[in-house]
Image (cartoon, rainbow, N blue to C red; front, side, top):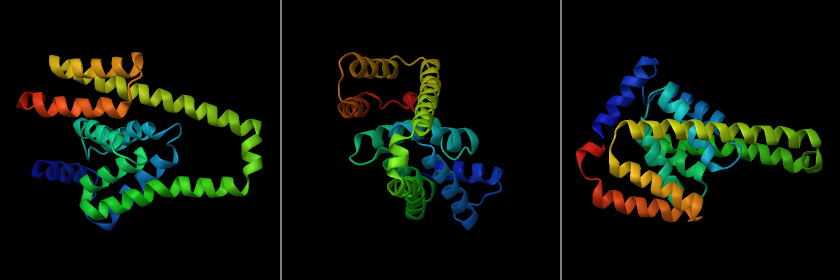
Length: 202
């Protein structure tokens, strides 16, 4: 935990942002709000967007944190985007960070749904709106694939057989045998608990 806090402080320092200040919470809120606003195509879309912003750009969390957030958010009940934002906010700044990221995550869809409710007929049957949504879904798919390939590449670079087998096995189970992702994650969690205790897997 101390190492994580140190990493966050160092990364925030490079951006001239002091953790726990109003400016820090504003940046956290603004970033999460914008990510939520462009999460089109399902809850999984938020994961690559969170990685691009908080891992690649800010450096507030690392790739391992992203994988942990993905696994836990996917296996817990509720909306995946909200689950992910809760864990992200808590990791950043405890309870206050959680409240900030939850609010930032639910506001964009709340605003959008409210507007659509008032102009339902226009949005539901408008040809151009449908084309825009299709284009955004294609883009979201590309972003997910990009981040997925990057994480897989890093996994293979470590040349550790067991994590590779777990990743390949999960992929095959989901794609070829249509196994529920929740069950895949739970099995992976048990395997990790039993077999990935060696420090070399960190």
